Length: 100
DNA sequence: AGTCGAGCGCGCA
DNA sequence: TGCGCGCTCGACT
Image (cartoon, rainbow, N blue to C red; front, side, top):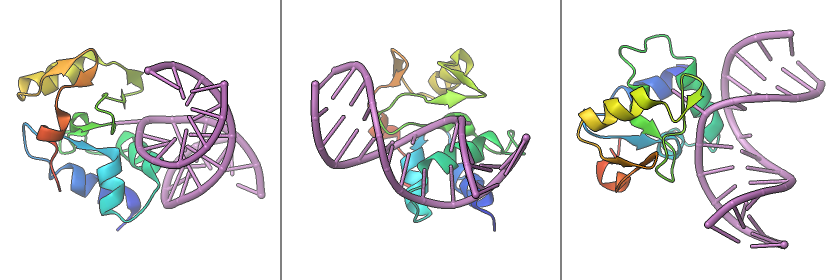
């Protein structure tokens, strides 16, 4: 199992209407390489299976998505799933946090 | 508050 | 080998 595979595995377990942070994922993998997590998601081969838009930064902002920051599609997608976003940050994102 | 620099793991050159 | 990245955190301003 590669690092990336682990990241994707955790990511695809995120239920609809929930989110998680890069930090949590790294924590589950027992590593401090938070950056590797983001990079792994970028390199994911199955964007259909991997809901990378549900992965956000630990301060509640969306981070990057597909190389762009403040991606509107990501925001819309999350709002559709019932997550409220204000000023490019997830409101009360801790409530939506999936504990994996 | 905002900014800076270090630290991690993997990919690409 | 070396650098950069969809990040994070502790120190400084």
